[in-house]
Amino acid sequence: MTLTLYNTLTRRQEPFETVEPGKVKMYYCGVTVYDYCHLGHARACIVWDVIRRYLQFIGYEVRYIQNFTDIDDKILNRACVEHSSMEAVADRFIKAYFEDMARLGIKEADEYPRATHTINGILRLIHELENKGFAYPADGDVYYPVRQFAEYGKLSGRKLEDMQAGKSERVNVDDQEYQKKKDPFDFVLWKAAKPGEPAWESPWGAGRPGWHIECSAMVRDRLGDTIDIHAGGTDLIFPHHENEIAQSEVVTGKPLARYWLHNGMVTVDGEKMSKSLGNFITIRELLDRGVDPMAVRLFVLTAQYRTPIDFSDEAIAAATNGWHTIKEGLLFGYQYGRLLGWELGTGSLVPETVEHFQETVNNDFNFPGGLTVLFELAKELRRERNILVHEGKTETSPDELKRQWQTLVTLAGVLGLEAEIEAETDKSSGLSDAEIEAKIQQRQQARIAKNFAESDRIRDELQAEGITLIDSRDGTRWHRN
Image (cartoon, rainbow, N blue to C red; front, side):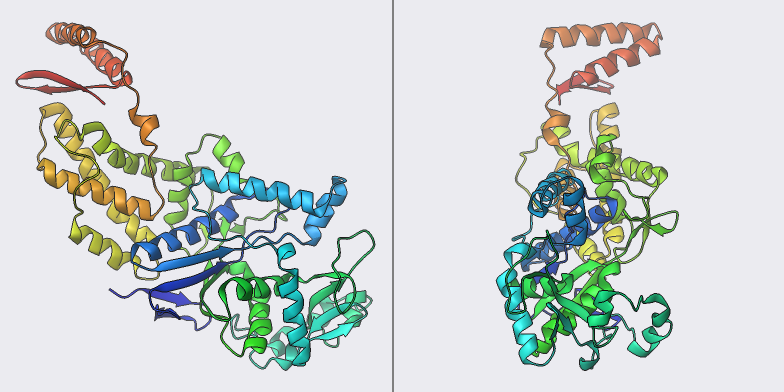
């Protein structure tokens, strides 16, 4: 079972082969911390979280780095409006980021480099570019001469001559930055300081780094010259990732990444969800409405990670219903395992099911197909639960049911889908055994009198107290959940 990935760089699906056998170096272009994260950010973070989990599941040692862009005009603008500082704004929204991701069950990266903590690496990289003739200063700014990099456009598939058509109509020739460039396509590596802005000293004068050079420096500092996976949204392919390649590969003479993976956007009525369009919902707004974080994960995983996914109340409702089905299966062992004579924490998985799951997901991280395997397991456990509750026994042997349940728990964990066991199962009744038996007797009298509404009411009342009734030809048995 070979894992194959769609590589944006080659535009084809390829077998996954790492630089160092058994190890994966993975970098995700993270968020610019000037506001709360929205559902588009949630999708990206969930996708790369699950890809990392899956790689670990199939035996890879993964080093996962995610950056924070904490130098940006948007951050500075917010700081100005709030009469604050860039650092204070960034710190506040980095804290909010971790709060939101924790609620979604996102595992923390191995390291979160920040642009402001990588200034030395950025300056070193610009200096090396300058020495190779791939950087030129202009009145305190430093620019990258795009036309000198013969492979520019290899990631995005764009050609400079095609982009040139009509560009003059979109450029303000009176713009000061435009006038500094030798060519309109050149991009900034270092920006000269403006009055009142944070700045760092450099050989070209006080200033701050351009956006693209930040990631090139952070990848190199934390993971080396060539990494296995460089990840991000499709909106970053051009110009951000294209420019990263141009910067890094000129200096090292090596590929920046073997595989470039990009997640699709979250859309609303077909338009990309973004703050600039005002059609976004933040993660905390959605969760504070009462939407289960696991339903959000399920919503994201129902679409192939490279394709757009449209957000709507109906889509979230469908994901919530789907999560209820999987959650019932995940809780099965905790609710009925003791009744079936299980010892929790021990046992084996169903190898055929695990193999089917892995074969499915190995096809370019086909998580929707993997979810189908989970739903099949969960629905089978629900069927057996209903038989157990109404007939006092199961159709499938307890040992086989345990293997099915543990397989579901394991594979759901690979997708980051976990039920809150204590919240669902620690509803122990305060009723004594005698009180429970008395209520069962009341229910039996109601059934004899054909008062089925009262019978159901008593069953539901006991269920709410954490007591499950099992009717059979031999009478009614009960157990505490």
